[in-house]
Image 1 (cartoon, rainbow, N blue to C red):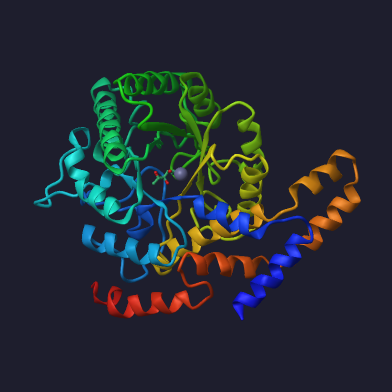
Image 2 (cartoon, protein in one colour):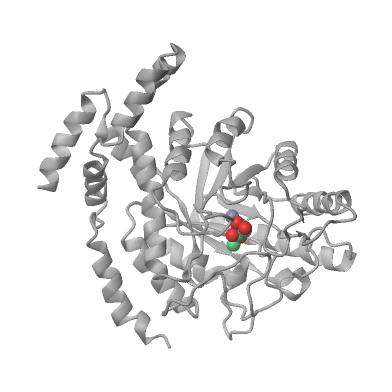
Length: 416
Ligand code: RNT
Ligand code: ZN
């Protein structure tokens, strides 16, 4: 049945000159860096207490992963329901310590992440990394912008320690490791000095990048942000700061689509940046009214972002990662829904008659363009999606949720 539906869909797309086989092939090659932190509400393994840095998880759904064994098992469950081969995005607060005794952030070493490497190697997954500049006693009044030189030096050492771990990830997995820098530094209320923190941030970043590292192994990205909870009036790493820094230092700018004013869209920023940057990176998330980090869905903006990547022929220039955290629903399902939504949006983009539509735009036939864009929405994307899942040996329809229910009953319900 599904097979027949795919054959019919294939013909319908072919009538518009679109090759569904090529789209399926291309999509199979896209790997997305899946964030480990959806599995435990950004808690990590340091027992450091509460989440700070102006980001928040809400909800108390049972079965949260409490230790490395549980988080790795949950990741496996999620990956078994996500088509394709992907990467795992690890935060520095997820070091795995033999005796449960963590070391401070400026002393973390590759050996503390050996289990992540073993995990990834066994499964043929890539690994990415992130320094953790939050949820720490020394992050309360700024990290890389801190006016206290000792504290700032501590965080610079953390950044460099993370570059070493990223190099180790790249060497061990045989694929370059993306290391994303994001700091929460900012102010709740009107600052007296906006320049100073940014100058210190610039200097700190220069010191971290100046440690000497192999640029073919580690791809450093810098993520901007407009505000955080408790940091409403000012963030040092604003859009302009991060973009100018990245472009002048030859690192990669990273856009998180929750990190802009509500009517700004990252889909429009993608082609703007691609005019100048050889590579850009994305954190795909879903902000509802604010940077709320809801689970990614197949919504308009997710579709629009993926359309831009495909239309700009930039699948090899835009590096994709997910970044959201919902503690109010089954966390494994949250991973699966978000990842599959990004993939569905990519497939949709790969199946668009982009050339024809561009010709309509270029010849100012806007009425016909609008008509075609709207009529296109009822094309049988779902039948191609199911075929893509089937070929990747992953359950295509809603039946994957039976696996979640079973795992919840057999595994999650025992975590009390
Ligand atoms: C925060 C940023 C950042 C974090 C992760 C945990 O607003 O989006 O990427 O979500 O580092
Ligand atoms: Zn982010």
